[in-house]
Image (cartoon, rainbow, N blue to C red; front, side, top):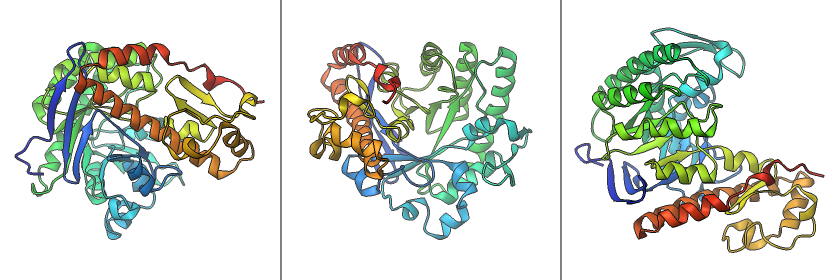
Amino acid sequence: MSRSASPFTLLHTDPSSKARAGILHTRRGDVETPVFMPVGTQATVKAVSPDELRAMGAGIILGNTYHLHVRPGEKVIAELGGLHDFMGWDRAILTDSGGFQVFSLSKLRRITEEGVHFQNHLDGTPTFIGPETSMQIQRDLGSDIVMAFDECPPFPCSYDDAATSLDLTTRWERRSRDWWRTQPEEGRPLLFGIVQGSSHATLRERSARELVEIGFDGYAVGGVSVGEPEPEMMKAVESSVPFLPESAPRYAMGLGTPPQLVEMVARGIDLFDCVLPTRIARNGTAFTARGTMNLKNAPFARDPLPIEEGCTCPACTTFSRGYLRHLVKAEEILGLRLITLHNLHFYLGLMRKIRSTILEGSFAEFRREFVSGYRVHNAVETAD
């Protein structure tokens, strides 16, 4: 992709909301939006091969800067051809900045103007990540979309603490942009800034305006899904999106459940990532259009139906709920693999459906029917 060209083409905006259909242009091909990015934290989407991801239509996945820096190390990955060759993935990769891991490792960290000093989670080795370090790691990994380095404040967070954190984040993000501009322009990956500000609308607005002034290829809403109630999550997006350019892609980090994805699209978000599809699959829980289904539960023992009728994933086209329950109860690896495949297939298919309804002008109806018909109570039922 030429650096003179816009990284995002907006095709259509839903008249009933802020939902958008577009195309994200990366150096490894175009990605249709809205889009869900399966999470490949450690250079693998858990339990799924690259061929299986391609077969279900994944056009972009997410990698984790901190985890890959700690193990096996970005220099090792670079020597083996970069992250794409390392993991056998030929489509786009977005890597996060490591900022969220700094947040999650808060008991071990020391934040300075330079960056963050902490002990890594594997063996306690002293580790440092700052804006320039994060950019260097992501460059060595060979990412197609790079995230600026930020600090993710906790929830709840007072206005004063959130403002102090935001000021530091803005300085770090400017340094990230400045470092990135020292790299050769030809073939340079996209760089996204991250809006912070916790639950404070005025800080979210300020952050968005400052990032636009600095100038990035795309913009993410960070600091969400960190323990806040869902209304606060929605508020964070609503307080950020109006101040971001329509011509740039927007990314909500770490979200979410299927209804949350629909509602976030309605608020103008284009890209998503979340560990839920793979994480709850390992506990025997599947996503369906009507809600979650805990396949450990006794009523599924003799159930001949697929997880979801009409689904074309490998699990649903071949196996019954009864068989999948047997695999899960017997702790057979195939069970968690099949449910993982189904869940990712569901998420990717949901985003394709959302996109088609935006283009067709029926998103409002789809949104109303999907959100009202979705139930989560099965996810918390106990197994027998």
